[in-house]
Figure 1 (spheres, one colour):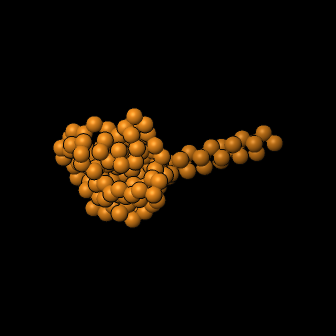
Figure 2 (cartoon, helix red, strand yellow):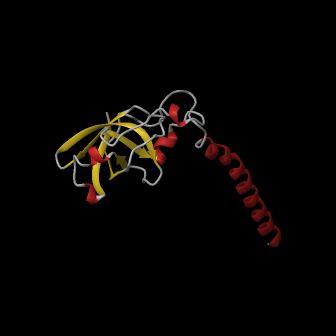
Figure 3 (cartoon, rainbow, N blue to C red):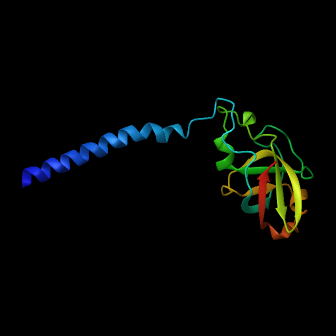
Length: 149
């Protein structure tokens, strides 16, 4: 009986080691930058539900200077980083894409120009002017739905 148990344990251990080795490259492929020019994100997708927050503008991840009166948005780092084109974020496939943001029957269009490090996957960070289309800046955060144009 001990021989069969040891043989079974060795077989299971070998299977797990080989299985882990085979599965590892697949897991690593997910983190590789997107270099084929095709978008991974379904830009006709949505609607998504997330929090809307606002930020003070400046130089965005897409390499453009922005001002508080622009109707622009930063998508979450999770969404943005899926579309990385090498190491330069200015070349991200989401830069310049349009989204619609909706709350309480009001819909506003925004252009993606930045990356939000503190956002959850479906959160959107926008300029003060755009945020004020849905509520007072003092509110700081509100739930919205949004989709790619």
